[in-house]
Length: 218
Image (cartoon, rainbow, N blue to C red; front, side, top):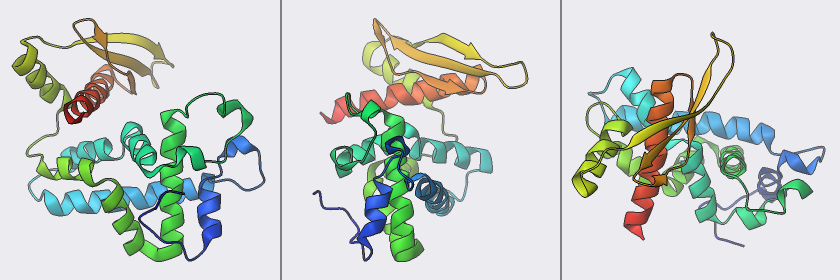
């Protein structure tokens, strides 16, 4: 059992947080995920609000979206060792858990921490488990722009620009969604959805940056 940055007074909350809805059990972690999502938004929003008194609401929102993205939360869940502990249905046991399920586990666990120890416990848990993405967000100045950052990195290192590919679009004119990936040379990075092409490209650039930063740390 990995050591979590919170000691539960009520261990049943931890067990419930690790119980995914795919199990089909009467009680699962969906309500805790809802609570954890709200707690995470508050803690991260407060941190960025205090760290960046110069940024406007839109820029703060974009910074926050990077910290609480599915990819970031899934990585935190893996680092916490939640995957082998998760109670999941048979359909998910044949392969590695997708990022969406891992992010669900993280948020549910945070919800359980909040119920067990209150907002201060949830804040401490978030700061510990998301230390690196929070530090990156604190260090940002001006508008958060992943496309600009990716372009700068690729030009500086390889003297090449990334290319964005539209892979899929869904929905009616008033509710469209676009799936885009960034490509550099022969490599395509993980794709991302957005409500507009611009938003999808921004998220695709964010996914590419996560991969590149991971390689730099290796």
